[in-house]
Length: 301
Image (cartoon, rainbow, N blue to C red):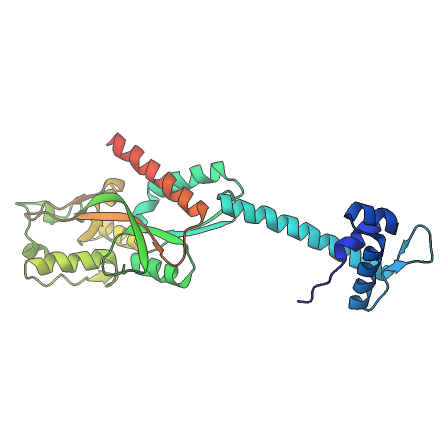
């Protein structure tokens, strides 16, 4: 895009209609101002001043140029204000993702608090599963995401901050016959009907690890879905087992954990971002607010 020199000097002349007065305002000599206006006219190929009148007149071309120069000044001021808001974390766009566990309580509270303090900040939240979150992070669609931590996905390209630790549970409807009798072994669980998320999601990775540790093949899902919400509704309406966090169990009173003979691992969750894309101040502020919410929830338990 072509740029023009002398626009600010021309606006000063428009305001005063006098070269001497405009030169004094700008702190330059009148010959220097005259040369600047002449150079602008050569760049444009038109006359912007009518020098035959006193005070100086503005030609129709000059009126158009003045409108353009004023719009540049307004845009520059707007740009400066928006840039400063991004630098302080009070404005701009914050784009982040999260896994389904995080939308029950933690992030809605943190996001509302952050927005209340920074009403000019625009926030875009994407809720999906780990593999899709990582793909969105790598493509630049989101700046960071909150989810279960999976070693398979996270190499030296990423930074991860652990924020929560939550027990994993095998879950079924409260009327499922699996709840009867003694605590169940992994071998017994493998013979049941399951609903699961996709093969590369955190839950499936962890299940493979758990069953492999005792030399068993992990169960194959009878129903597979890319939605944790769909999986939960299947569990609430059918004779299936699922693998979910304690947080999900607490949210639905018609499901409960299956009593197991073997203890399941603790799931770690946190926030992840790419090392080659440092976090904006607004993202840092959301992380800090989320940590405060997590601390408050733990204090209540």
